[in-house]
Image (cartoon, rainbow, N blue to C red):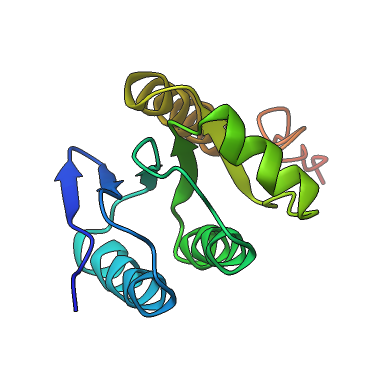
Length: 142
């Protein structure tokens, strides 16, 4: 069975699907990607589907499942390179791909993940409302 390669680029895992996504290949990708997220600690996943002419309902649901698994493992998912015919098919099948962001190409996908990570880091650095205003109350003199 063929496997889809998963490349690490900085803090991002890049999955470039260049083969037919048969059901078993899609399920193996799901497992392989989850293992790689844990092993590398990456916070972003880009799935390039530009080579796919057709996406059936199983592959569409698998992409949504991959995004959900990635999110639980603290990684955001962006699908890039979606052809118009694939987008039309997904909409006609009623697959909204929850949890998946899309970008036109890998470069834009990487930019999107970088912006999201920067925003998340900024939010984590901010103190809760009022925390910086809290002072030790003055104790009255006896």
